[in-house]
Length: 568
Image (cartoon, rainbow, N blue to C red; front, top):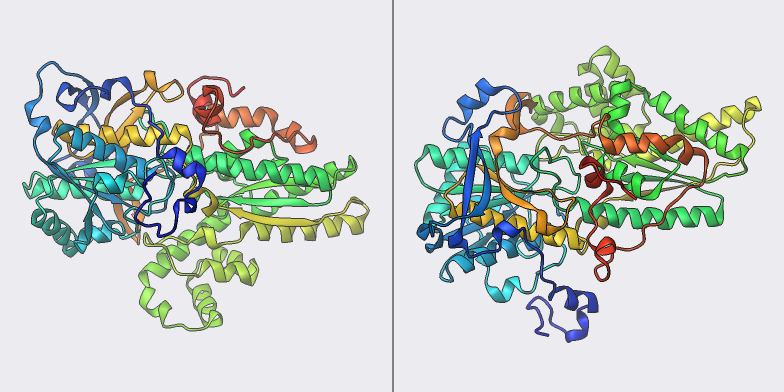
């Protein structure tokens, strides 16, 4: 076994699993298994955006309305598909398991088409493109990262290319390096950036193609044609293993309520998938909270009722799953956060000049509406401070830093204390809190994600080889074995609408939230009351890489249910 260059010690510094995973051969959809010259595309009818079509047509006059593309064997030989190319790749945003395999798929398809072609990795995310920081990805380098987690091969970043100067710098980098095409691996905001770059290059007549790849463990970049974003499968299996371990501990010790916050800034897909895998006593789904217009007090009361009911059975323990983005979906708190985002974006310089929390909170209170000022004042000071922390690069509150699970614990504990005084509760309530986030973002990809990401990268290059730009790589029919997967590309503008960002309307890819009438949530609803009072925990265990396909290659329950299959 050759030692990767980033390890300086002896071979024992590599785990046995890492050595073995280097040898794994990802499975590909049948349409992309031939030589690149023999793989063409079938184009459907022109497409439309989700909404705001007139505005988007104006903004994307060169790339709007492209047809859906499906890769298919082609008899014409496609001589141009094998020409020498330079392709650049960017990892953008937070990490997700399988990113290295996307790059491996691009590399293998690119070199398979023409061994003299070059793959450049731009370092540290989109900022590397703007600043022309790059490295060539060679066969020796890519072999060190196949089937492994992380984004450390070239690093990632959250720079958003949005100013005229940034677009011009990105263009200069591409022209200076004779880049024929870019592949942007990222979530909804990153792929929105990919769409803007594709339009910019097309408007300038540069011939530089741009293809996106759907990445995010949150699972909120999906639609009919993007069935799941990569990394969701691995992250949910990782978190579910941890939750199952905690459930077994809770049922063994029988003395703690565990409140577990899970990643998922804008959607509850992770929490819902983990609930389907582990059957906790409580799983809050933010989208349901929003639809029912539940207040923070009502959410607390619903948890309290379950704690009391279990105490009456002698079970003073339990597990509560809390989605990371919950606080934004509580109507009165969500309104407050939207006001804060707009106020702090508009007055960022002045707000930054206020050096104490007291001065900041006083100024904010004066600028909020009456209702939001009341909500802000009623929150514990720790939560107030977290709401006023630095915004993310897109101008939004960093909800992962808001300790919602602790807020719920504090409020549940207060309410139980009142009930005990009233004689309505005689149990005990001890608690532990957890946040499972970073534990899942760089995990060894599951077989499913290793196969999916390699297929996405391979497909991305095939879209380039067939002359497309402004598309996102797509692999469909994924609840079935890889032999039945369908590969192609979806126009990025098809997934877009206009939203308010930094106080202005901007084009963005719409986030896919949990559909309350969808099969995954309806399955959860079917069993929720039973899981609340019973101790019905299930224990998924660690991700398996070797063994029967039904153990090693199984997709998420969300994907199975969405495509009409049983989770059993």
